[in-house]
Length: 355
Image (tube, rainbow, N blue to C red; front, side, top):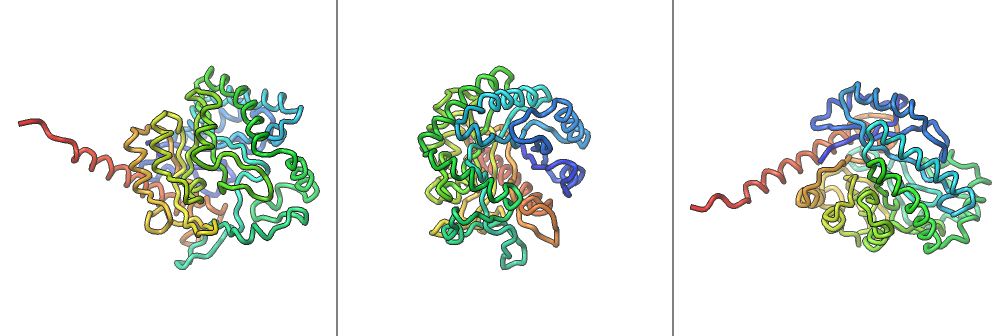
């Protein structure tokens, strides 16, 4: 298991030099953030990003993420040019040593939260999703969500939502199949493993279809193109927001098939109505058994990449919600500790030589 940490480039208040000091940290997960969605990432920008990361003593082997343009998801005539650009981005990533690319196929909103700084009893703040608050939103009257307010102008968002009214789940599946059959052969050719991120949260919202939300969806996804390059980012926090999803079982099944290329390891505290907030990584603080999840990865001999995903904002830290240094660092050390303990317990459980 290779521990990684997401970094948003030089504008990120979390410095690479601080990330390097986290015990057991292997590498950085990043992307090119100043190129419009759907366009080609210049090779020199990727080379500069790699050199900056490697200069800090860390590896750059995972990209998160290459955004999938809405025209591809909608299946519009413009998609072929955009898919060709996506293919070129895969080639450019491979050229700088990237081995895994995380991406998603969520219409419009690739994650949804109603609070960016929910105050927890200990005074820390965290990302949260209030199911009732989302249910009360009328898309016809506009959608205002923290973190997305500046992503679309009101008229742009309304027009985009209108386009999706004719796209149900099966049509979205068809558009995904068209996309995968175009990009996976390129990934195979250059040695890249594509890792689809599940829907966050794993349920339809605002009338938009969601198709990567549970076991059956994951099974259908990997069967579209039967290739190791067509794999998953198994996000415990996203899938775990639906308590019907058994995360250790998913890890054992799809990881055992060699189809999990990237793991996001975080905990969530989930209520019966689907409301949740992002807790500490400890099992006892959320709804997920993180020790059992890590054990599942260990049991399948997982040698891929993971990251602690999000964290609370603690100790007065300010910055990008969910992406501070301190709590993600605590999470990384906790997860590495679980892995070490699992490894040592597994060795002591092995039968000794016959006498």
